[in-house]
Amino acid sequence: MNALTLLRPDDWHLHLRDGEAMRSVLGFTAARFGRAVVMPNLKPPVTTTDQARAYRERILAALPPGCGFEPLMTLYLTDNTPPAEVDRAAASGFVCGFKLYPAGATTHSDAGVTDPRRCDAVLERMAELGVVLQVHGEVTDPAVDVFDRELAFIERHLSGLVARFPTLKVVFEHITTRHAVDFVRGSRAGVAATLTPQHLLLNRNALFEGGLRPHHYCLPVLKRERDREALLGAATSGDPRFFLGTDSAPHERGSKEAACGCAGIFSAPAGIEFYAEAFEEAGALHQLEGFASLHGADFYGLPRNRDRITLVREDWTMPATLPLADGSIVPFRAGGLLRWRLAPAGAA
Ligand code: NCD
Ligand code: ZN
Image 1 (cartoon, protein in one colour):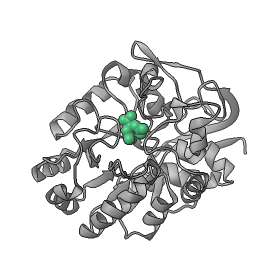
Image 2 (cartoon, helix red, strand yellow; image 1 turned 90 degrees about the vertical axis):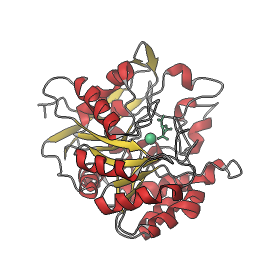
Image 3 (spheres, protein in one colour; image 1 turned 45 degrees about the horizontal axis):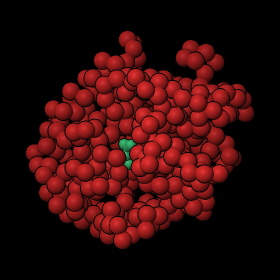
Image 4 (cartoon, rainbow, N blue to C red; image 1 turned 135 degrees about the vertical axis):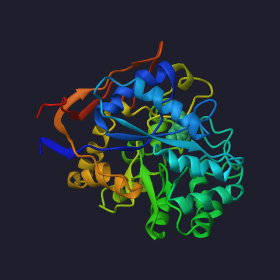
């Protein structure tokens, strides 16, 4: 197959940052995806509907005229989020969910939730109003091995939460283990998961290939090959509970190539092309459209996109660095070959 035309995909988990950095990265996503769920982990975090409205307006103002890209906003859940914020979010028309970061689990998560039970009143209201909960599923307990933190989160928090709120829609974000795949498969209706390109393409060996590889470090961290296989199996199975969320997370080069480097992989410059590669490896290109363009919209209860994109089978090299505000960023697969290329709008 030399060309693949898909209903325009959406990115159900994206970090855009703000200001000049946001303006550097937004175009990559807007060229490929119709919509993206924009994560709220700015500094300070986006905790109110009013803040999300202002952030959304800054994103829209940074788009080229005529670009139809739509940012879907999220609010950052804290121990102190009032249930009334759920009412404001639901009434806004532009907030699609609340993101639960366990405090300290990842980049800019220090204001996160110390114990999900503290949010029960908010979760109750979300279930009533049909607002989606997006979960970063890792415990922060330093006694738990870093590779087991997703499984521990399922056992200690997520399975109980899903049972306590039987009508709450929950997205288990960027899942990384076969345990998470099994959990979602065995869950009630209304539980889904997003999958990143890096977790479909790499296992944890990629962190240590010939030396320490900071640009392969993200959270949750890459896992074993058998986990990657389970994730790829879920993504390519056609099961509508699994859908695309790049978790593209830009960090300036110096903050990753450091004694204590930040977590995050910047995949937006080939945000759909990486998935095409993974699906092709699995012999499942025919399942890409469901995963990338249908399942997420259906889960969120939003209309599917109507226009299409075309990917062509054509080798190209990802630049070694790209500009990020007045610095630079090293993208996923920097200096390496990609097999699929997005056809320019109007071509193909
Ligand atoms: C994300 C970031 O940099 O904001 N980093 C990451 O490794 N995925 C935060 C997150 O989603 O965990
Ligand atoms: Zn993320």
